[in-house]
Image (cartoon, rainbow, N blue to C red; front, side, top):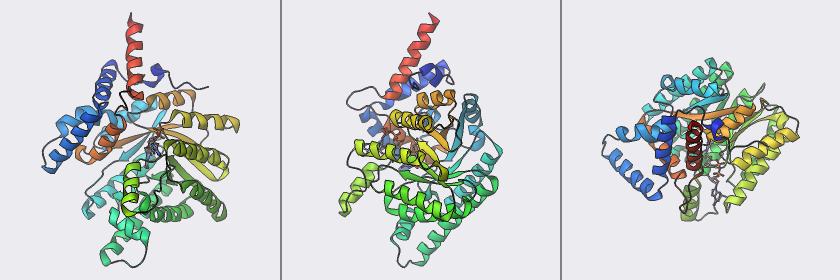
Length: 390
Ligand SMILES: Cc1cc2nc3c(=O)[nH]c(=O)nc-3n(C[C@H](O)[C@H](O)[C@H](O)COP(=O)(O)OP(=O)(O)OC[C@H]3O[C@@H](n4cnc5c(N)ncnc54)[C@H](O)[C@@H]3O)c2cc1C
């Protein structure tokens, strides 16, 4: 059985100084009160256009982000690749979506697709739906009906952007993933992504949709997607995640008086995630599985299913992925064993990447005084290195 506890393998790519920096960072963000306060102060400073990069860049940014540009991420790509871990460069610019920003984001995302086409260490490209349309436009599009001129233009911009990116990805043979965000406009995103799959996934999975398994309806959607792919004779690319917007989803459902789209508890989400992985391995002739999870049990399950089905460790239709700066014990131990592993490495200017960084900080606060998993692994490795010196 694979052990995710080998911290020597997990942190081999980090120097002693890097380990100490990680230690102080995770100690700092372990405090929920401190993270809440920092979040308030950060948004306060942002609203007043005060400089904040000096505080964020050497701490959170340095740990979770590759750099401001693709060129700045290159050393990270090379370091990860030394340990058989691939990179997915994610231009993570969130918020402030005027037409000019969207144009710039499209140009940068196209650049990332072209760059991936030239670099075997970067096997996928990625983007978020809200990079190319406001939430309002996407919500209108999902609701349907008649649209005013501005919404019509917004919908067209979104479709054109997704088409351009998918076509470029197909021409260069670079698989491209579309992240999932809020459930209430995903219906429209699903439709556009499915159209792209029908067009560009005839020979192999180029366009990938994302399924958030915390949603109660996603198992049915998965089955239907596999059926459609069989009928339409194309390949399905699916990134599986549990889902990152649970609180927002529940709050909106409650405020607007509709049933929450999210499973009632963590156990149900976990069961749905694992069932989807199992079902997909059984239907691999039609699909590629991208397992985006930090959950040890789910990663272990996928590995065991591969073994049961007699699949090689480097089966090209199965990928494991974790976020840069998190769960290195899973990524590096799987890569060491020969599985296909890729880290999501976000990049972009400090100000624009802040929402992403604050989500990472919140995720790593300690619950009821317990030391978080990341921090305990870091402590374990620092101790191991100290003992070795004696
Ligand atoms: C490579 C990669 C790509 C990602 N891309 C996306 C993306 O496109 N869209 C997106 O939304 N997220 C994305 N995520 C984040 C992901 O959805 C999860 O938030 C995060 O990975 C934590 O889930 P986990 O499987 O790692 O493990 P765990 O830590 O075991 O699970 C935590 C998750 O379980 C669920 N959960 C927790 N408590 C409850 C509860 N009470 N009731 C119901 N469910 C609960 C939530 O989804 C929570 O995030 C991505 C993550 C990775 C690693």
